[in-house]
Amino acid sequence: MKKHLHKFESTLWLVIKFVLYFLLLLTFIIVLGKENIGLTRLSRTMGITVLVFAVVGLLLLSVYGTYDVGRRKSRPIIYSLSLAVVCTDLVAYLQVMIMRANTDIHEFRFRGVELLAVAMLIQILIIIVFTYAGNWLFFTIHEPEKCCVVTSCQESLDTIAYAICRFKKQYKIASVVDYRCEDIEPYIEAAETVFMYDIPSERRLMIMRLCYKHKVNVYFNPYLEDIMEVNAKHYVLDDIYLFNKNVKTLTMEQRIIKRLLDIFLSLVLAILSSPFWLCGAIAVKLYDGGPVFFKQKRATIHGREFEVYKLRTMKVNVENYSAQKDDDRITKPGAFLRRTRIDELPQLLNVLKGDMTFVGPRPEMLKNVKNYTAELPEFRYRLRVKAGLTGYAQIAGKYNTTPRDKLIMDMMYIEQFSVLRDIQLILQTAVVLLKSDSTEAFGKKKDSGYIFIPAENTKKK
Image (cartoon, rainbow, N blue to C red; front, side, top):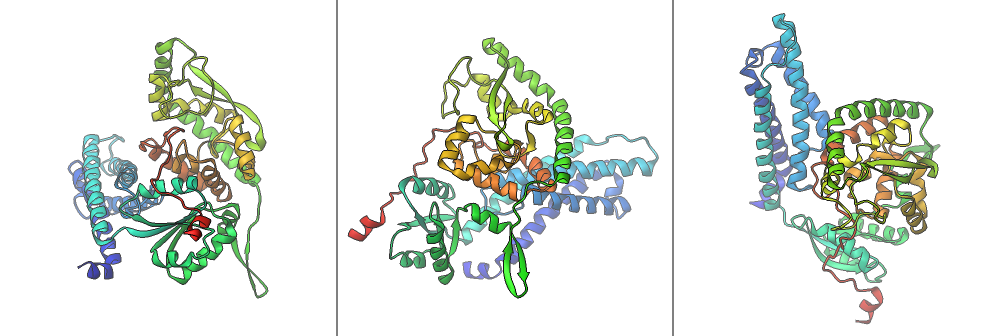
């Protein structure tokens, strides 16, 4: 049975995706059609609504993520699809109300808001059912991939193996190998997937060629030169095929547009979020009577220092260092403010002043910048742009993501910068609020349960 499913698997998932998206559209049409007759029959209203729903839906799916079962866990897929469909519903609903006002020659009014809420609820239930059923079907068809982990030390092994083990249905670690092992090819050949982590680039090249030779999937963490390569353009000089990477800062036009976007968004969001500021400030003040705001020097573009503003989440007069797991410095209101990211709303003032931008690398403490740069000299390159309120590292990473992995994410953002990319990341920030592990503090040891055996010990045995 599995063999037959494998042959037609791509068609199967295409049909399932079509059915899912069609049901989401059909739900909107049927439920809203109780209040809007134009949606229940072939008409201009129905045609335009279907077109708007399809176009906006596809755009938002490209922002938040598609129905990619087997690649992601169920909850992230549910969050992504739910955000996409809710935003699509709002746009389609607004379009229907505008057309209704024009057709019936009435003044513009929001009608059937309760029906919109019902449609959204039904759609989210459909997404939940399809997501869990889809992942169940995917892992019924596919066994976990047999993996070989190639790394350099126990600490690196714990980091990558811990991440792999969080996806037990996708991957199963079958072997762990020191990259210095001379007889590494049999391990590569026996695996379905190879994970390389913290390996020198020259050795990694050899292992990648072995993976290509034996048709084995391969994952590896990139270095700065990899980021340059992946963002390079293809160029043919006479009859010589080359990669061309222009290393430049933002153009004047990009800086102007980015600054105008910062001013507009910080003003709008500061006004819209003011009730949260007020409630958070009252909670902080009532808890211990201390100051409401917390100020700390951080580093932004070219290493320039500035004071970042946050709602205070820790006790008064405590030592200042990065938050740890079960940190007793954090107050009860502070724990909630940190978990919901409300404590970071005052940074909108930093954006408005020009110290920060809306999208960019996280503003690090001066002490951390010094320590990280000493360990990773290329860490200074992330200071080529302003520090940001949100960004790729803040969305895809966690609070305790390693400095090296944060650096890679920040450099990918810097090298791929565009205004459209900024807008996409701003929209994706909503997903962070739904992630339970996004504010996971430092101090949580990543113990994989696997033991790293150096190459010299393997050779002796």
